[in-house]
Amino acid sequence: MSAKLIMRWNVRPDMESEYFEFLVHELIPAMNKLGINEIQVWYTAYGECEQKMAEGVSESADDMLRIMRTSEWNRLT
Image (cartoon, rainbow, N blue to C red):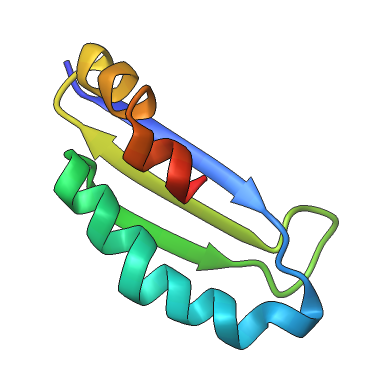
């Protein structure tokens, strides 16, 4: 059974352009390489919650745990 990872966070206002570059050129490609697929990222324009939310799916909960224990994942997060 597949496993879904959901992450939520805020971006510092002075880092928005750097964040976008990181997201497009590092985070999403690295997540794919690690085995997290179907990645989606949302921006919250209104409301009392985190500014960004991203999700991705792995083949299984065991795969997701393995991914989250890697040094590459630790570097990304």
